[in-house]
Image 1 (cartoon, rainbow, N blue to C red):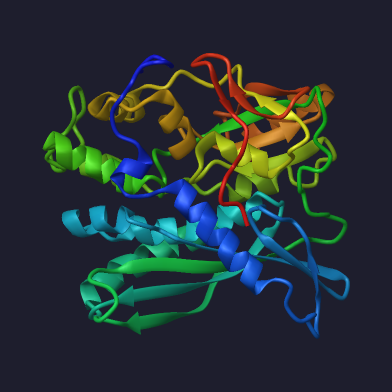
Image 2: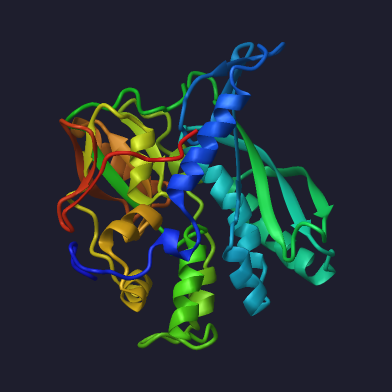
Length: 355
């Protein structure tokens, strides 16, 4: 891994994704869209910047979220493999539902393309089916937009609907307090985030996607295509535990996602696991500064659970029983604000672009 104060190479902005410009554009959108007319049915639950939008309808609270696979689809196109990104389409959305403790009900997909290819659609469908099986929810419908004047390739997105079982309240992070412990669940790779930067690094280094990196047998492209881990069933195993104070899906934005839970405390990640394997190889490939790495990628941890310090052992046991034997302590909630990583000496004070 590069040292904290080293690295003068690539950044997300240099690769074409300017977070600052995105934040400015989002502020413009939101200032124009709000306040709108009061809804005739249902009552929105205000959670600015959180993973899912919530609406109370009678005695029921529903959760809604939407996301796309992003430029990972270009890797799928280059390799002619589409089922993995089909699975991503489901996972990226249901994981955001899990981050508020919602149980997924179903998903609708949206595929935009210049012309529909039955072979590509079949593979995407196979991946969606696997993703739905992992998440325990249904495909409720979708949209296929054939728009050759707008897109040159295939764009995959989805919207997921979730609900809260009786007596379960949304887990928003409002109960997080100093002394809480942070438990991390391993990622399955880079998931579906940061691929504009990843692809640029591979292109600049002249990496052959079909050839393995040193010490591996699987081609780099296949490694990068590995589907997003689905955390739905794991989180379902602890979502009703009173000691669970917050949940974070570590997606685009890296460790800064923790700031979406509570801005009145500091998340000190003093137990973040040593990064190796594919992540370390990619970091060295592009001379990426640690600050860029941890604010762009998940860096080995795909989900974080914030737990009352006195109940950590019990929650860990439940996580392992629910399918996460890899769950481990990665940090503590301390006084202050922001997110800190003592190892690489990093501090993040804002999320940026949060809705």
